[in-house]
Length: 222
Image (cartoon, rainbow, N blue to C red; front, side, top):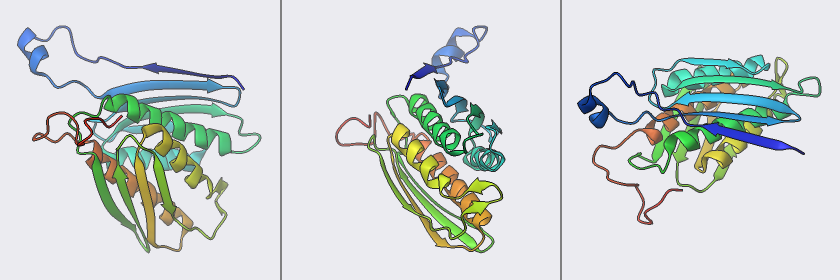
């Protein structure tokens, strides 16, 4: 099956700034990634050091809601557009959005110099509580302990959350452990999961001013 990906890294520095400002300004950690296959077309524009502006248009309304919540609570500026074979089902689109979002994080992080690497957050939403633990280690592993008894939230298949998280985890190259502490309502459970992930990713991707290079005795996180 044809599979073509294109990654574009953006330099948003303004050429009109004074020379001293250009030399001392921190590099903007952002990426724009596109991926097209016979099943989907997905584009993601991500800025790690944002203000939480999110816009998602994937054709899957519940996923859009989760992605915009993810951007808001992670303080990421995020634009996602996708078109997929929704006449079959939502699986290809949801999974491929996870793939491209993961690649955008990977590209925006570069060699991962200076990042805190680890992040952890617990988020409640009424009766639901979920914990996310992240290690942006260069190695991919997903521990998914989010049990949802209902098969759907509206028209959205709840099992697709696992597929999204697995795709994103693999592409970022990180350890991600998601643990549902309590919950009854599937909407609340999934939203708490995305918000916890956002908070944990925000912590893990932040720059540590005391750190030079990468936070690893191996000398690499890629």
